[in-house]
Image (cartoon, rainbow, N blue to C red):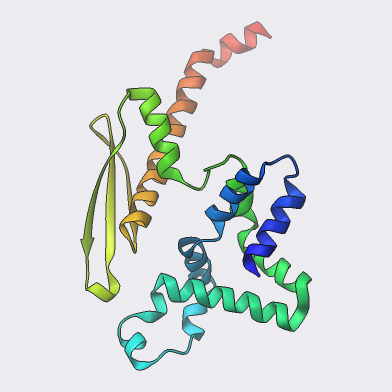
Length: 197
């Protein structure tokens, strides 16, 4: 149901996109990490019925359980209210992410975007350091990303991949802010702009 709603929305909203671009948008949104984050924001974990084993091992905050539970909520919404109700639920909670991913193929994959930009700027890929902590059933990972030897971003996540994506997102933001400052500086001081007008 979820994949169908996202595919239908992409097809209708971005008619100029290729099938490959739309598949990348769908992959950036319909994945365990994103769905678990949305489910956690909605408090879905608090409503899930778990067995003793899952309850005692932190099942309410496990990404896989949260993501599956959110998909179940979408299915229940469809059975109760039909296509329009399910579509509204999905787009209310994933619409902004879909738009961000559609802004450019791979927009949701910060590691890939960061690597492409850093290699272009410095001729070498970013370097990641990841450290895990906590018990096996509730591991947390912290990642740091270095660009040309400088620490540019930190991030955390429930998996190494999520932590690296979070760190890459932070580094991407730093690079974007520095580019904005460079662009502003290249324009000259405000009075110079005013005199050219």
